[in-house]
Image 1 (cartoon, rainbow, N blue to C red):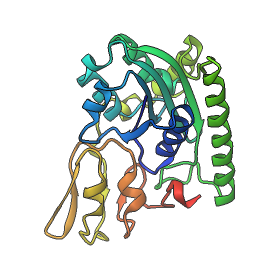
Image 2 (tube, rainbow, N blue to C red):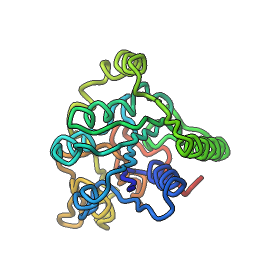
Image 3 (tube, rainbow, N blue to C red):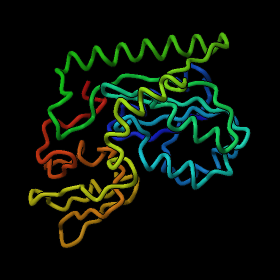
Length: 251
């Protein structure tokens, strides 16, 4: 067994690591951008695959990875894990359908509510104590999920036909353009000092430093990793000002 994740602010990383450890003590968990990710997938038949949902969709980086490596998934047994700030619909189903198309067996789907990770929007902001409560509830759900899976009962969050309709019409269709591909909307302000942290963190290698200033290209996957870690709060995406830098460790 192996746990694979895309994580921007640590939420999904925590969830996949915890669930994987409960189901297989010696199982490894690695980020989707790890250099040896392909070899790890080839060597493991059981996979826990986690990512944050974006407008009731899986991040384009995740979908692109699955498609580009379509030959890897045949006969793999996959549990899809989707984290969310508020609403997911069929978040887990978005990858489950792709994996199934390429010959994988879908064991189930898990939706886990975690603290909001959109740093430049006030929409979903909560107090630290509220976010700590959300994490406690998430941990409890992960523990119960692991217990049920050990009994052979896999959750079906987001992978039913009804969930598909809810995700499609509840949000995904209205915001399709935001998740149809990578985005070129990442903004870096004059507050940037060129420290290079964002460039080293980006899973898409979408940022470089030139003349002591960070510059973004057109392959942002909207993970918010750079925005949540920039020491100068110089990077934004959906909004124009960093409201709160959101990291799992903060809560």
